[in-house]
Image 1 (cartoon, protein in one colour):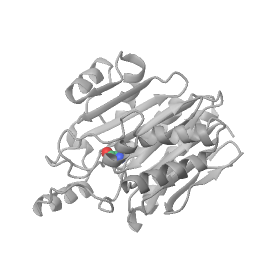
Image 2 (cartoon, helix red, strand yellow; image 1 turned 60 degrees about the horizontal axis):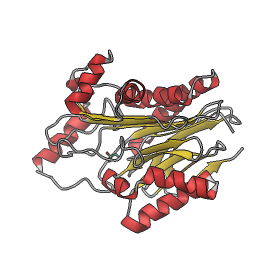
Image 3 (cartoon, helix red, strand yellow; image 1 turned 90 degrees about the vertical axis):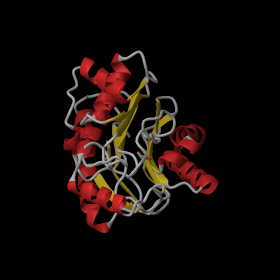
Image 4 (cartoon, helix red, strand yellow; image 1 turned 45 degrees about the horizontal axis):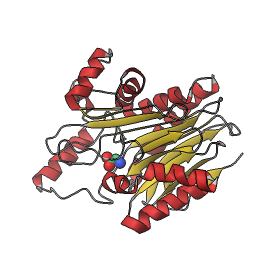
Length: 310
Ligand code: GLY
């Protein structure tokens, strides 16, 4: 039932002491997106509004509060896609952008390109009138302490399942006109190599939207999600199975069994069905559809996908 919105606040083994903040942050994001949809705004506007709320909330690995890379610096990635036009915009490895989702949206609308990285992306931001922030503003004490601990132990192994407290954020929305949009934003993995980019901003991997097929956003271990092209895999399954729930379950089952994948997906079908599935211990999410009086926000415990049907 439209309009509809679902947001995610990351997968992994979210510590119990952070569950309330994850729920609250996801709820606030879904409510911000819902207000846009309920007042006739577009799915793109709703996705941007929702993701910005989570980028601003320090509990998530996006915007302020993100994990630090090996150099002790926050490097951010984000992407957006419009299911009506298939236009997309993405940025990666930006260090001075407080809300990279808004920069990704400007790339979508105002650039001849789809994907800008690093200094070039920041130069585009300046040209577009998006202010650059002090990189120190993106760092919170929790992450600085985590980085200090990792550095002391000289732990340069890859980030593995269960070793993160928070993850990527994202949103999928369908507006009253039936248009789909998706957006994702992340600080990537903790102690990542400088220049590392995960699935989050990559079209088809971390996000995909097509009005005729469905839309999906992913969270979890980016190196695995990229191999599974998980967002497009989910959308292909929606088109095939005509069920968001079945598609989310099939995509995550393939992801898990084929490559031991750890992550989650949220999605909306062209009929406005909202669903989610994950192979991690937890997934933080919130959603609302037209038949619901308010947003439902949860930190889900590993289970099969559930669905809101009209
Ligand atoms: N899924 C976020 C990342 O791996 O960067």
